[in-house]
Image (tube, rainbow, N blue to C red):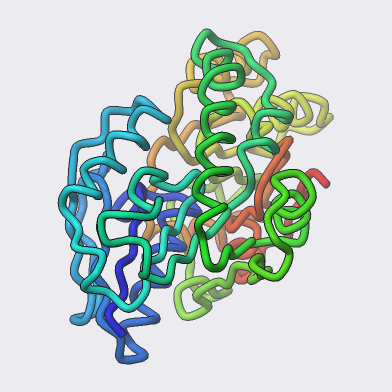
Length: 312
């Protein structure tokens, strides 16, 4: 088949949605299909290795305007993609590019699939605002995304939910037809993520290393991880925080206030090819998010043999 894969997020940027789109496109290509990926310019420098049957077209620069970016990307996609040329169109990240995927202009007869990595309703409910941007996300952009999800989902022939909880929300809260929503959980590439992937130089070999990998955002629970770490009555334990985000300064200040700045290290951006070794070289992985659609990092850590402590 000729498949059009539309995703705002794609490597070399790192994250669950990026990994999903990348692995899916390459797997379909290895199965003999032709995959055209349409995405945005990456915020991260780096090269990506894709199958020869995969083409990647970056339609516009990322402006980091959240929902505004989604709408702009949608309009650019509508103008530049000949949807009629494809056997199926797959929007790999809800909220989808709603304008692109509504009927008309070549979309009416093209089978449309969407993947929900969690719902905007779930994100809005779980958000604990700390900054002006957080309040803007919770009370402006998340509600806008709920509307976009609702519109795009009405026109989709099939919606993939990555967890039972996400499927339940799509059916019971968004009122999408149950027979159009399928639960397909994430997988992990165990040729990359495995217990022999180490070592990595960041963890101190003489200390018990607790690791967090992910964005430094308001619902990721990194502050809770830091506060919990401060309660440990031992000095031979370190907390490594791998990732970037707008809450980094606030989290660094938190370690100073708690007197543990010398035992918490912020690694910043860690390239994708270093992550398996980083997992393997740590004794424990922690993810205390208030909301996750799935949490792909949990699978990656366990595939590397590193046990996980996670919020329910």
